[in-house]
Image 1 (cartoon, rainbow, N blue to C red):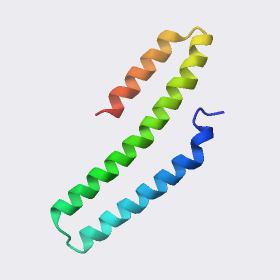
Image 2 (image 1 turned 60 degrees about the vertical axis):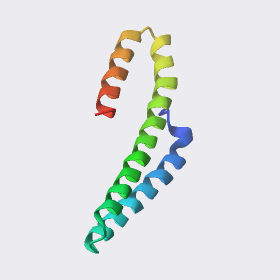
Image 3 (image 1 turned 90 degrees about the horizontal axis):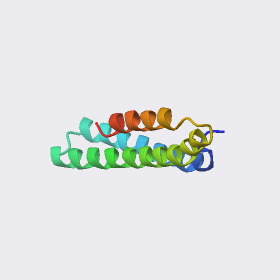
Length: 90
């Protein structure tokens, strides 16, 4: 079972809202809306995606890390977490 299973529906709901925001951005662009308004909406989309990522990262750290510790794979898991964090904050 994946560590985010309990929150899967909530995550899907968040992603659907983000999808709607991106569609709204496309519409704003087609309608030649003011640049600043587009930039504000882009910031909102990025923040929403970051929240989804944080939820997934937290679930991974809490559940997969604990499993790795129980199995004696601490170093492997720490390396994986550091690499994922590097990619996430780029």
